[in-house]
Image 1 (cartoon, rainbow, N blue to C red):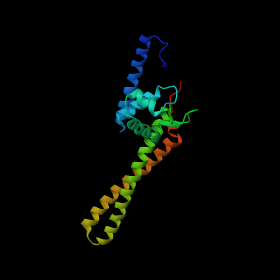
Image 2: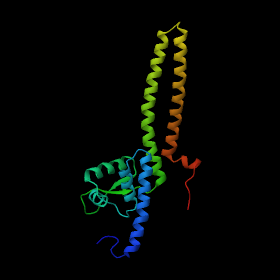
Image 3: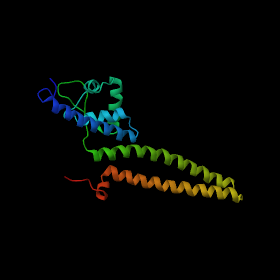
Image 4: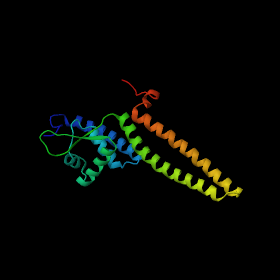
Length: 186
């Protein structure tokens, strides 16, 4: 027996059509942020599930291989969009959506931006140190010193941006962002 057996089938079809439209929209939206369409659809399907689900159930429902499903689930767990939960009487892993879209947004961008900030800050800092060493070698060469000064100023400005972005990430992670831009209430 499935969850729709005792319901009027014409109404079930309308319900599924409405859900599918939202699921497709979620998938397309997440695709814009670098998450594959199929993982976006996976999240959408899980969003409409009222109980935790296993990889097997998801794989069957979405007609995807268990390997693909496992990869998608791992991506969503890493992004803190779904959680692994305990299933009473089963040794299988169960998963459920973290239904707070505000928190999902904060977690997703915090995770992605923090990685980018770290990588870019390391590259900028290394280049800045190299330029400062090069300046010592170029004493007396005004033209080269001017080029170094110009590049150093650009790198310093970029580092200011990344320090600002870190503060923004912290505002997302701590929830302080909602003091500036409050969540919509009922």
